[in-house]
Amino acid sequence: MQASARRCLAIVLAAGEGTRMRSARPKVLHEIAGRSMLAHVLAAVGGAGAEDLALVIGPDRPDVAEAARKAAPNAEIFVQTQRLGTAHAVLAARAAIERGYDDILIAFADTPLIEADTFRALRGALDEGATVAVLGFEAASPDGYGRLVTDGQGGLLAIREHKDANDAERAITLCNAGLMAVAGAHALALLDAVQASNAQKEYYLTDIVAGARAGGLATAVRVAPEAEVQGVNDRLQLAACEATAQTRLRDRAMRGGATLIAPQTVWFNADTEIGRDVTIEPNVFFGPRVKIADNVTIRANSHLEGAKVAEGAIIGPYARLRPGAEIGRDAHIGNFVEVKASTIGAGAKANHLAYIGDASVGAKVNIGAGVITCNYDGFAKHRTEIGEGAFVGTNSSLVAPVRIGAGAYIGSGSVVTKNVADEALAVERSQQVEKPGWAARFRAAKSRK
Ligand code: UD1
Ligand code: MG
Image (cartoon, rainbow, N blue to C red; front, top):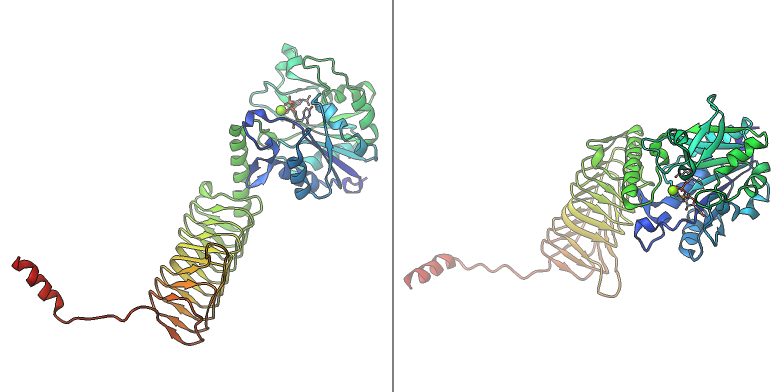
């Protein structure tokens, strides 16, 4: 049977307490590349073709349940009221398992870098006849992990938890990543047979391997790189996973046709979309929901979140694009320019020191240095509209709500509070006064003293 034709349930365990994070936030809601660890794992099991998702959480964790529903609306939530071990946690989802599946995937929500293909490989092992397929890795320092006890021919006999292992078993470096695939037809029998007769008096999920072998059922191992199965227990491991995730995202951007001059200094979000022939200079940060079209240049030290940038635009250096910024084709957003909830038309330019908030800026508009849209009156936000081809002179304040007509000119230093007609010139400043010879008289008067 094709793996895709097999019905699959994924059970994601997230009932851990995460005390080592020292955080008011549940561990699995901490973020990697701007997305919660839980959402990463739900995406990976979804990507491996699991049509149904069961999430096991601890008691009093409505925040985790809510985050899961947001990331995967079809996720079914089960509560493990007492933390009696990983097999006990899986059995919290008994009602889901009882519905009957070909494949059951078991994942830990605090192992955020796991990829869909790895889960697919585990499902593949079931398809080839295994009843239990375990994900292993070669551990640089195996202390604390369960060891994979094999028969020397690649067959898996048992998993021995560190605390229960003898010296010979502790010398094994092939360790259990914790993630498994179990044939649905046997899952409940294997799980129900698990006893808590071990050093930690816990129901170990890992015991289903020996259980399967005792019943004459086949087991299998698939091996993943250690970096992919790195778990998160504290903020140091969170940062280590972040580094791995960033490397992946940088590689993905470069493979997709973007040039990163100094990849190590560019920070992506898990959902950043980058086109081809995009150049990203050093020290650029992408928050959530950024889409960059082809041929865009993002110059050094820019910060972008919730922004869409159309083809050929140039952003930065030192630009800030905030949520709702939509930058048109070939537009230029230069140094120390902030754009929020605004559309910038094709070919428009705001090259220096400006704030554009709640505005629509037409094509080919020129925004001078120091122009500010005064969008907030202390109570509400108001919009500024600037028609196509208008020229807004340096150091002008546009007090919203206000509309500048197409092709209009705003004289430098104006505080514009009234709408300006198309093609008009608006100047709002006092007349310049000039007193001929005044400076010489002034200096003479001062030097007489
Ligand atoms: C587990 C494995 C070990 C493996 C290691 C990899 C078992 C018995 N051991 O050990 O072989 O090398 O992971 O990191 O499975 N959880 C619950 N409820 C529980 C207990 C755990 O939901 O009652 C969840 C935790 O939130 C966590 C996962 O299960 O996401 C693993 O639990 P943890 O206590 O970290 O297991 P380890 O001792 O690390
Ligand atoms: Mg652990």
